[in-house]
Length: 280
Image (cartoon, rainbow, N blue to C red; front, side):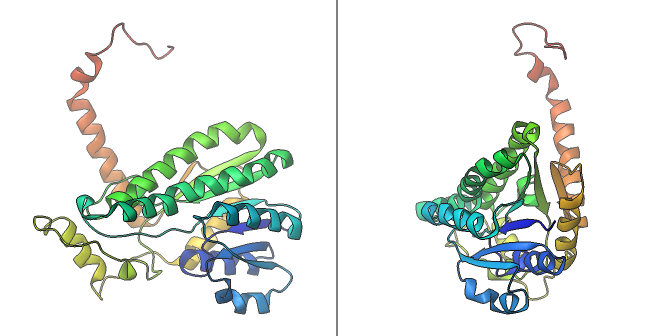
């Protein structure tokens, strides 16, 4: 039996590649986007298997309506992919309050809200896959992306805790953490106002992303293939890193964190009221 996928941000980037690959694999897709008209070619090619839906992921009423309409149309949701996201480059102090809220709403609050809205259906089915498209930036911090990465760190943590919560219900959760992929996202990222003093940190990041020669190593079509194979696997990981650049950065960050933890270990354990054992 074919699976029913619910994919946000399906009209461009990784979401577009994944939607096309899922349809080519014979599954069905509720393909949501702010502008579903951009999916017209896929709707023409796969008229019975795609259900384009207009969805602003920051609009709770639209979230509920999109999920209910999908259930009415296809009868179930087997795979949720929270892919929609957006970034803004800049120093932490340079963001307006509105920009901070926008980043958190799109990249953290929205996937949590969509997940919570889908869970009752998956719980009743006693089955389901939830895939959160986080980022290597949900594991490793980088200058210039503080607010975006605050959301992604939160999404990865939410997913890890949720995986433990819903596994007995037959629902499997994976936080997918890509490195740089050739989606054109970085070149189009908006920037905050510039603030003097951040030239060698934030400025370097902006220069890298806006350089016309900057070409991330990741291939979106290969990522889509990996995600489809992940859904077919009976024992998926809670965290799946995509891209050799992301692997390198996480290994480097883990080594630095372990070194720092060992260095400060005497201070850490000095705060215990009683001796701790691993059986506690």
